[in-house]
Amino acid sequence: MSTTSASDTAAAAATAAALASFDAVPARRSPLARFTKRATRHPGFMAGAVLLAVILVLSVGAPLFTAHDPYAQDISRRLIPPVWHDKGSWEHWLGTDKLGRDYFARLLYGGRISLMIGAATVLLSGVIGTALGVAAGFFGGRVDMVIGYIINVRLALPVVLVALAVAALVGTALNTVIVVLGLLLWDRFAVVARSTTQQIAHADFVAAARAIGCSTRLIVFSEVLPNILNPLIVVATLEMAHAILLEAALSFLGLGVQPPLPSWGLMISEGKQYMFFSPWVITIPGVALVALVLGINLLGDGLRDVTAPDNRS
Amino acid sequence: MLAFLLRRLAVALSVVLTVSVIAFLLLHLSGDLATDLAGPEASPEQVARVRVEYGLDQPLVVQYGHWLAGAVQFDFGRSFYFRESVASLLGDRIPITLKLGAIALGLALLVAIPLGALAAVKRGSWFDRGALAFCALGQAVPTFWLGLSLIIVFAVNLRWLPVSGNATWSHYVLPSVALGWYAIPAVMRLTRNGMLDVMASDYIRTARAKGLRPHTVIFKHALRNAVVPVVALAAVQFGFMLGGSIVVEAVFSLQGLGQLAWEAIARKDFPVVQAIVMLLATIYILLTFLADLLNAWLDPRIRVA
Image (cartoon, rainbow over all chains, first blue to last red; front, side, top):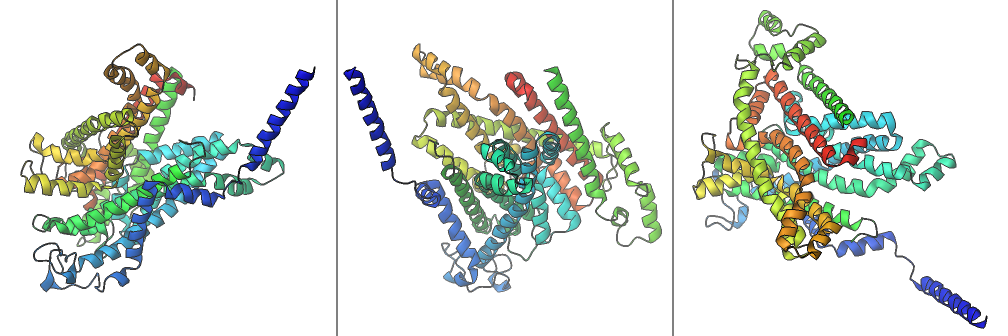
């Protein structure tokens, strides 16, 4: 009898100790602190963030970094090589293009175009894709079937070809390029929003919100959207990279951004005929494109790891 | 399985039909084609004659009906520019683009599958990290710029391969590398993840436990199962490549479908553009349909969904 009670007491003490040690665990850090800690330990995320920040600062603050006008032509100074060539000079340290325009200035101002097209396209395609995906995932049934069908149709259309055809027909203003790309690149948003919403739609807190009489609109905006935001941000980064590459390709093919705007794709296209003797005219904007897209992709992949649920590897 | 097949077939066919409406409307709602066709100096009578000659005076629905009835028999009307049937134009160009796509896909798989498998086997090693970094870098390189850089290095400086054209097999090497490049990261990641899943499974542990050589375990037991999803991805990637070949063909002056499409867009030769959009979309739908079937055949759980 006494042994039993002794073991009971021991068990109780053990439980108490366990509880005490549970209480002793420091309060969980705020989500932002956790995010910062994980992010700074993720080499890919940091590399991407630094790369993107450098490009962002350089292109947004372009006038601070170069005194040259990206549109000023000087026929007497055509195709000057960059400074690391024998004939290069520090006055145009990345050289000049076929019309004698300073290449560094064009590169910086061109970065603005890439960043703006990427951001604006993702904003448009993100709204379209998220709306479709959330509707499909939340309502299910017929709505899901119809939206799934729309996604299938969109996927079947060859993007480059349709974008080229539309650009040729309605014109190639900067806004048109953005609208065309935005209307074409929403599919991944829709697919991801749909599958994540499906998981959320059956969660207890959504049922609870419904039970206390929340409207569908309130549930979608205050329960579903905040919970699917992280994966959507990851998609947004990847699609931004995609949009920037597509704009460059369209401009290269002559149906994107038009001269004299300094789009990087257009710079490569204009340099093409001189690339055999002056290869830097295509190398420089190409490297800039690679750096920008790589930065965005690394940031996106990093974000996916950093914002993944707690029990990830 | 039959019910699943029929359901998927119905969906695929209706997607083709919807795409045909889009392809048709896309170019018909864009302004007055007769005026464009007749040229800037044409008199109103000439414009009117062109309108009748090409059937542009009829209601859209009738025009669409005519076009669709022809399209199902691979008759897409006549080109506005070449005065030749669109079908024969396409017929000349399709083999070139298919050849380019097939070589590009082959190259991509040949590089990506071994890389992915090896990265998974040596998980966490410098090789794995290097392969993943290569993927990230690879996805950031624009196809057209890669193509131009390949020309500078291998055709101009080293003089190993021709700059452009499609006369011999050697003309396809550089374009295929440029086109296949973009598919490598996706295939490599999928192979790697598939391998990681399979390598953690019980039957691999059994195979190792009974003393099979690591080579046999990896290549005969693990890789076989890990590449199954890659087959479906490869089908989809092939569809993307045919659509994306427009850029590569422009860089290398390869006279395939993409080049034809680009020229046709510039000339407002809309029967040709419509036909190519339709053809590429149909090939893509067919490929995804086959990939779906393959997956369902391999994994019975999918058939129910």
